[in-house]
Amino acid sequence: MNGQWIEIDATDSGAFRGYLSVPVAGKGPGIILCQEIFGVNTYIQEVADHYAEEGYVVLAPDLFWRNEPNIQLGYSEKDLTKAFELFRQFDTDKGIEDITQSVNTLKDRSEVVGKIGALGFCLGGRLAYLAAARSGVDCAVAYYGVTIDEYLDEADAISVPMVLHFAENDQYAPTVKVNKIRKALENKSNAIIHTYPGVDHGFSRAESNHFDKPTALLAHQRSISLFRKTIGPHYSS
Image (cartoon, rainbow, N blue to C red; front, side, top):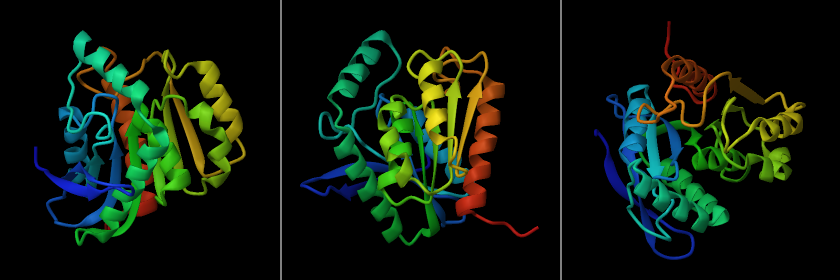
């Protein structure tokens, strides 16, 4: 890993950690990376490092700190059980407060030049969507975000560009819910929804049984396209 752990002040009391990865150039636009239910584990750190290689200053806050700080789970049955336990305990509103604090932390860092986006996977996909509504980010990308359909009353508060990636066979974000989301956002020109046929939840994570490389590459290309267009970095031809 190329990053470092930093402390982020909470709005109520205490502080929590975040994994910060900086591009080789030493500066760039910011991205808040919202974790899956497994914590800021090796995979999330690798995603942060990958986007740092693309030119972004990436901060992945530990959003489970209020229940079990610094936890990093793998993908065994035991870890999956623990992850769902933490997911059930998770307070979404407090999590968004922590994301907003993370956005403010990035804004204050000398490495961050320009705007800030949000990126999230699974639980983090829901949080990236909500960050677009509440946390002052300039764009958002969500991969197979769970229960976004329960927060569609916040769609009117989202005016920034947003891309939502969904998997056709995803039991956690099934087609009926994706269609509900699509219907609610159909008149918002800033929101783009992609559904990928024949793939399942976690298609972008190489450690997942559902990993699908062609789909992962296509989704990443679309994500980077949104970030480049909205927050940079902008390269001269």
